[in-house]
Image (cartoon, rainbow, N blue to C red; front, side, top):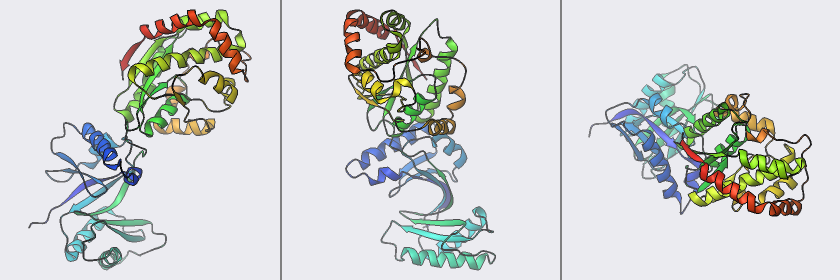
Length: 394
């Protein structure tokens, strides 16, 4: 049988491999995501390879750079290894292939170490024997090299699976769980720094996010909406697409401004948002709401304020940033490409009608009694806001 050797891409999926009963489900979710991203590339095949996914071009070497750009943001993937795949099994053939691959792809000025993973336990040599024999062969072929088994500058990897793979170069994936594998959530998305990061972190845990944005025309410009659209666009890199729900919120804001004391207005506005988001969650059969609250960051995010707001929701409220400080949030925002969008100088509805001295320790029961007195009119406005809302596909 003629030996076949070509450049391919091994895809690692870390945490998913530890799942027992649900492992196949999670693997299939990742596989489907990869295939969607590579749809249209007729010669590219994605298959399972004993705890890995293998992406290869059936006509020869894979254009790794082009494929990587399409799939690098898929949740659930922890790493990408640019590898040389070979059907060879005899150790003599593997030595020759390894030396040639090392010369063409590795820095021969760096100290190195060979590590072998032998997933195919039927292979006649043990992992350390393979590493020793191939490492010795590489040293003999490249005398300038030195081995450092404790702190090598470069690791030469060998994986013995259905086929044999050699690699030195790898890229980190975004990790997490496959998108959509953990249910649905409604993300309260503003134009600020926090909420898109809350959406990103929740999506990374497999929750399919449905952003909802509260728009206060004519007090807020269309550029504020554009900012939110652009933030949703960043999230869509990871989620394939985003359905952005835009809710007209001005009437509710003006109504509450007229009937609620200024120091309690922010809490009442947030309660109305959660009521609308909960109603939307019922429509799309979502299991939770997601907000960008960080404990103690502002007056409306103290524990007392959070408790006073949460009772308006009929779904669990997830706050992935609850224990993050502002710098941590900014760092993630920069990393995923949201920060420069979030700091554009266009205010959203959350920055309007804000009290100079908002109440930081509201009493939940008092807030609920105030809302009870306004319930009949407020319910009509909430329903109208949701009825007048529209969805944009980003």
